[in-house]
Amino acid sequence: METAIILVFVIGYLAITLEHNLKIDKLIPALVMMAISWALISLGIDAFPQWFDSANHGLVEGYTSMGHESRMHLMEETLLHHLGKTAEILVFLLGAMTIVEIIDYFDGFSTIKTFIKTKNKKSILWIFSILAFILSAIIDNLTATIVLISILQKIVRDRDVRIWYAGIIIIAANAGGAWSPIGDVTTTMLWIGKKVSVGHLVGYLLLPSLVCMVIPSFIASFLPAFKGQLEVEDDVEDKPKSKYSSTMLYLGLGAIVFVPIFKTVTHLPPYVGMMLALGVVAVFAEVYSSSKFSLAEVNHTESDAHAHHSPVHSSLSKIELPSILFFLGILMAVAALESLGTLFGFANTLKESMPMMGTELHGEGVSDLVILLLGIGSAVIDNVPLVAASLGMFSEPMDNELWHFIAYSAGTGGSMLIIGSAAGVVAMGMEKIDFFWYLKKISWLALVGFLAGALTFFWTRTLF
Image (cartoon, rainbow, N blue to C red; front, top):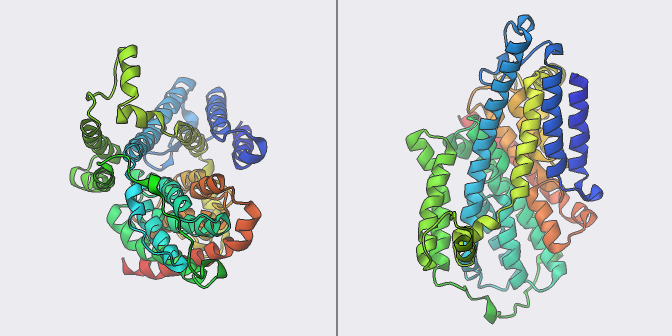
């Protein structure tokens, strides 16, 4: 039965990876493999020789002597435990996405365009690299990429030049997301999963992530595509549509940055702080839009009318629900493999078979090479399940440098292929960037940045 579950996972994983070829949204195989995996566990519960206790991160003692009812009860408890942990991540993401959409409702991101006064290609390259690095740490790398490419489309008219900028934005956004607990889904997973703390995450990864962004940008500044001046057309139509644009931008970004502070002070889960942040931003949004304050209406007629002018309703309707459902499916599918002890056994095999690097630093002797391969693998395979799997594989304590290296590798490694990160996929869609063009022109820059940042991490981890 365990073989059947692994096979379901592998087939589902392939369907996710080949999403563009199959023309099937990746949330579908994710949800299907989650449901089938747990169904097979339930049907074959008496056949499994072991059970993994995620709460205590070890195999359950005396599992083989348990009766059918006891095993079913244990499975239900485990399922509820994983659903709770997954829900924490999903609710957090829902809150963050809604705040970003509220900012966009007031056209807050147009404020950023006013910062760009130069026509020099090299200067614009650095402006967008730095903006991508900073913005992605606050509003996540996917949203930062969407925002900056939207602005880029209004500034750089020549698409052949623009796709070069888009390539650098992908690298910078992924690098910026790696060092912030709210900058990348995988880093958020590690933070909510109590594997990393904000202080140590920034301490370990800020410099490596900065190097990962600066080196490719520096090399790119010498390439022909970034030489000379841009022909910039003044766009009269691009004025902010609301007088509250800049206010909502700073309020929204400030509210998201407040979340880690709230967690540090109260020791409550991050999603609680995110809900508070959303509530505060929603209050201002409703007041500024001069509409009745309401997060939900029971009366459908009134609700439909209100939705047309309510920033909260409008923002909630634009949230990427397919992404939320994908995370639910993939995290719960990985949880099924974790519960059977499959990932735990695989991790032990890796520790024994891989050549050792940095053994004295990694408590249980996990090779640096394993994590580097995980980073390179995240360019081909979605980094969310990779990190989800690592949570079930390794049992190092909170803030062990292993977790920070995983955050760096999974976050920045995806830049090496355009399909390797959410930022890359959305840029590919917005600018119709060819896979092989990116592979030829940008991938080597991403690889150089990734390796340079990894070497920097090997130094920063000795400081803690």
